[in-house]
Image 1 (cartoon, rainbow, N blue to C red):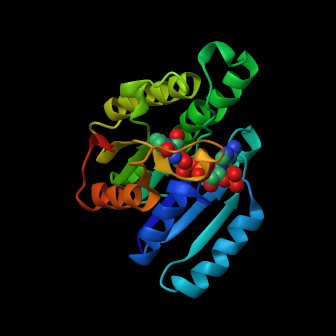
Image 2 (cartoon, helix red, strand yellow; image 1 turned 90 degrees about the vertical axis):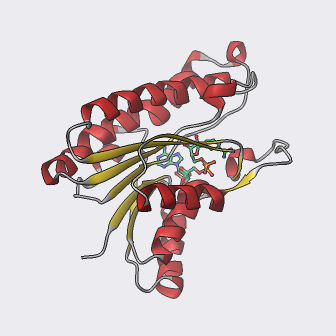
Length: 219
Ligand SMILES: NC(=O)c1ccc[n+]([C@@H]2O[C@H](COP(=O)([O-])OP(=O)(O)OC[C@H]3O[C@@H](n4cnc5c(N)ncnc54)[C@H](OP(=O)(O)O)[C@@H]3O)[C@@H](O)[C@H]2O)c1
């Protein structure tokens, strides 16, 4: 049977680059995003460019209970928790309602998905949980503090998952990229040394191929 990766936030940016990288290596990919049209166009791309890989689209809003419940708890070989929303802005300018929206997707959805998706891997005793964090939790640029507070909370969840999974046979890796050129940067001036999403995808591939656990930074 071919290896199978589940990727949240698969339709653009880092998630899309990871999907294409694993598909090119012959892995099957299940991918979650809200935009069903984008997912359908990915399916067409898969038939054309990655005939050795099956792409399973999951059109779901992970900020909602119904969307989270739409993700099937299969015994994936790799679970890549990548989906998040980024909005720039100083903390005192961020409304509580908006902060709650960020927390819902960037933190609570991942807690829910870990509880839903990890048990089949634990039963089997193998698998790899890869989480996309952020280098910003080390540097805390002031124009993205609310977003980074959610990524810091995710870093805390990751430490918990590491402990919970320590004796399970499941590896846990937190990949923390610096600025990466994706649609997250629309409307902003990206820094000159910004990473391409393919560089993060290569790192995710490497940590899976080399069975690397712990927190890994790329900038
Ligand atoms: N770009 C950077 O500079 C950077 C740096 C460090 C870390 N990161 C992290 O890298 C990860 C990916 O970021 P990115 O820049 O690649 O993002 P992106 O280009 O904005 O893509 C986000 C992906 O998530 C999906 N998504 C958004 N909201 C969703 C929801 N409610 N339910 C399901 N899917 C949803 C989007 O598809 P739909 O819109 O169709 O739902 C899209 O596929 C995030 O965890 C981010 O925090 C990014």
